[in-house]
Image 1 (cartoon, each protein chain N blue to C red):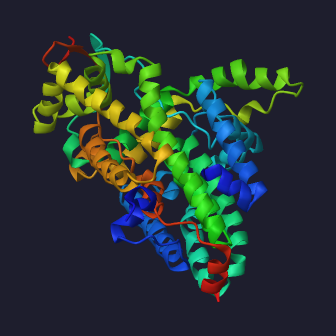
Image 2 (image 1 turned 135 degrees about the vertical axis):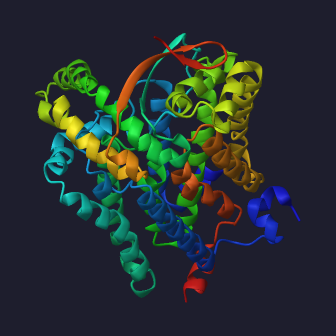
Amino acid sequence: MDWAKTGTASLNLTMQSLTHLLRRRLTTQLLMMFYALAIYKWANGLWMYQMEPIFFNTRFDGTTWLLMQTGVHTWLLHHPAAYGWCDALFYGWPLVYAALWQKKPGSRWAVCVVWLLINWLYVQCYTLYPTNSIEAHLGWLLLPLLLGAQRLQTFYFVLHGLRYVFIFLFFTAGVWKLRQGGFFNVDQMSGILLYQHSSWLVSEPNHWYSQAIYWLVQHPVVGYLLYAGLTIWELVWAVGFFTKRYDCLLFVSFLVFLVTDYALMRIPYTELLPLALLLLFSGYLLPKAEEEQAIAQ
Amino acid sequence: MFLKQVYRYNKWLFAAFVAFGVAQLLVFSKPGIVFSPFYNYGMYSGVIHIKPVYSVTHFEGLKAHEYSPQEWDKIFVTLERYEALPQNDSIYINHIARLYRKIGLSAPNIQHFSLAVPPHVFEAWYSTYVKKTVSNGALKSSLARQTKQYRWTGQKLEPLP
């Protein structure tokens, strides 16, 4: 068995091609993840109708400027009743996709074009309001492109294209730390922790969490080792450009990062989970055209 | 090679992939403005030193451990974003309007890029907004917000008199 060629699929000890069944499995998992995150956001009061924002912050994003020119985000501010409709569309449309997935596979592409439009409008407006950064929502901006693929081979190629996007994200996060100089500053983590947690530390100075943060700030070398370790881990993602062999390890390390970052920095990167999931499906081989037809029949 | 496989499969898909990659590399190579969905992931990559004094907002009686990071951000990031509102004007004047004029277009409607929310309007909305997030019933009726200067002593953050 050549582990280098089979990638994550090698966990099953098979050199299996991507099949419709596997595609269905990935699609189901993505949709389940979408709704798990939707419930999580609802429980934290993060749906648009729960927040009812009254202002927006312009950001340095050329695409966003084009959208802002339409005034859709200001229209919403003046019509707060529409927030609920936006949520209904954003959180409801995947159900339309799921319902038509089997019954009308030919409509998959059209459904996903609408889905893409809904996601772009929603995510752009949502992140203009005081909520979250747009970068975290990258998955929902791009995944309809994958789920709309009519042919299995197209699905395979888009899956791998998005996998490269995800790898690029982490690798360049590491490069930025070198480029901007954070990696070369021993005080970096201490400075970050005080900036990130100042309101927490002031609110509960004697809580064990505050004491732990203070301890890290007081020991800058330990904090720096964490920061440097993170940078090196991010740079290691470059391996994904050359081989799929370690995708499973990258996925597991991403989960560790998710938990650690949540605990130490209180930054939830959960919205990136759907893109990470693609790493578990990258090891399957490109289906041949004739196989695709045979399976479809 | 992946791109070679894509090229053999579908030239349009290949062109789309190449265009996507080139756009992402351009955004990466020129820091500053981005174009969704091409971003730069440089959070906390710039040099950050410990500051001698921090200006910190907090609510009397609010216990941080009772809130999820998202709820905590809802309370505090919203304030930061409101304080950053004047930047909307600066981005519009110095970047958006200038860019439009540079490419021979008239500047877009400023109301779509900049918004004035008077403090009393914000305070009325924010008070309701925070109360929806705050779980402690007793606190809801008496939320007192304070912004103070805190000195880093080398051990902890200590309020300045």
